[in-house]
Length: 124
Length: 376
Image (cartoon, rainbow over all chains, first blue to last red):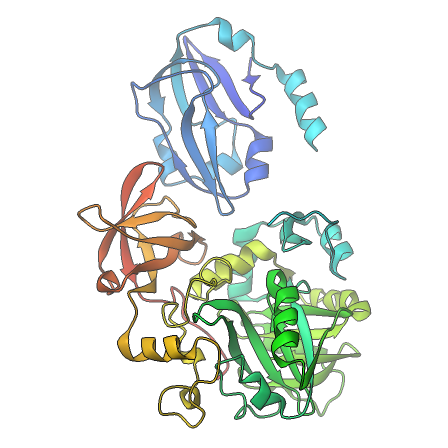
């Protein structure tokens, strides 16, 4: 699984010619119990680093920034009724959206597992 | 307010760390927002069994002097002359415009009084009281005391089992009664009160004994620690105001739905009418009403509507704002409190709230969201 990470604690994983996007286990731990997720509209074009989704815990609201530029093609509708999936399985069933990347080079430039792990340990 | 000095800690700081507390800065103190289980579990545990809260950051002010009750009535609009020894009452400190400077508990201890005040306000409260009443009363911040709250339906049972002396029966205590109890061998001042809407107790004792009393409570299966996060969601469900959010120096008690805190003897025509800061404005508002008032608000969707969210009528005219809001663990959906134009304050009035640039439907409702379970 060739997962890449941002220093803002999103992950992106290739799925055919699409990318699946979510937030990391570290991010969900920091947020606490997720009670609401607002997802982007399908067909929206987003730039790398643009706010695309909102994740709210009991404590606070956080913005999810797109790891790469592209077009949203699918969102995880199940999070509307079961936002707790973001806590339970942040890199699996708790995914946020799939997008068709417009600049394949952006993915390669993101953090790999090792670099992201180093970042998280530096924040602990 | 920026804090430029080191954070203070409470006597239970080590206990918090031992229970994997997530610590945050609050009113100059490093306090637990939640422990390992998280806010929702701590909240639901308090509603179903018993939650243990460290509120030692709050101010405990000892008041001595002559005619304490009558003197305090010069600053606080409650009926304190009529407050019996062993009873406590909710009070307010007010400015000359009738705005709220702090809310507090006033306890009659017989030969002295004790005031329990908000942490963020405690130093200014003490300065105000000394400057206004210092000629006749002496005020002392009791720095060597801890304050812990045991809240929930099992709290009374746990407390009964913790009482050291067999003649001390907590079942005789009613809501807002205060008495001395020896708990787990430690002398305590215990009131039957709290900030969760549940039955429960607030316990003041020497700082040095607080960790051992807390551990004795935690030995009961029904007791778990609960942090400031659960304290906030519990009080919101109970419709209880938080100073600094729902109450401030620009807000009067009548706007805030706290008319009951202006005791009848202090109102127009009462035996000791007025005589507190802002009395003319507040007594007039009791008769004439206010332009805005505090209401409960139910968002129709799942998006929480938090402090500062602006409210609009159906024609998109601004009509107020949300002062507290979040997710209700007991109800499983978001809840908020806020101020709206009185004309739009009736239950079931449909309004709109601006969340991230979008207007979302929200309806006015009565407080509390979850009914109180006090031992009256």
